[in-house]
Structures are given as C-alpha cells and as structure tokens.
Image (cartoon, rainbow, N blue to C red; front, side, top):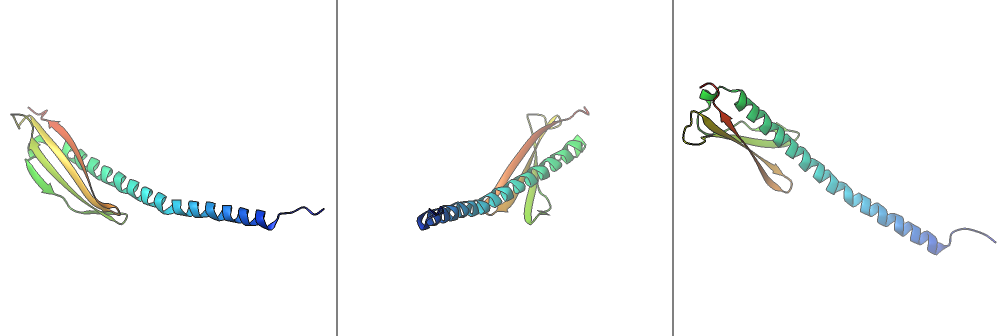
Length: 125
C-alpha cells in the first residue's frame, strides 16, 4: 500500500497556505502605516517638548504675549509647522504666563494637529 497525499489534500493545503500568505501580506501595509503615524507623532511631541523647554529657559520678562509662527521643520520626509502663543494667566501678567505650542503636519490620513500647554511663574519678583 502506497502512502502519500491525495490530490484533494494537496489542493486544500495549497489553498490554506495561499490564504495565510494573503492575510500576512495584507497586514504589511497597515503596519507600515501605523509605524509611520507613530513616528510622526513622536517627532511632533519631541519638537513641542524642545520648544517648551526653550520657553522655560528664557527669562520671564522676555516672554511677550502674542502668537508666533515658527520656522517649518522637515524631518524624515514630513514637514511640521509649529507655532507658539504666549498669553497672560490670571489678573497679573507679571506673575503668570501661559505658553501654548501647536504643531501641525500632514499625514497620509489627513492633516494632524497637536497642542501642548504649560504655565510659567515669575520667580524673579
């Protein structure tokens, strides 16, 4: 008696293997897109943290209220457009000032915007 695979078993195994390969190949573009979006988000976070650190290190009196569009930052194939806004907090702007940093960029799924805020206290007075 010969032992081996029948034509039906071989066809089913091939179909199952093709289905599995098709499923795995469909995962690749989705995972690539998710990785790209995560990289863009981390870059925007890093850019905003850097700008907030710069404002934190600046003398309190040099922070004048208003909105400022900052220079475009190109990184890893994407363009990021940061802007900052300094605004008074409370009734005495010589004591508290707020800083808001907004970072905009274009992702494959459309425009993205992230905002980051902090409040600075005048320790000089």
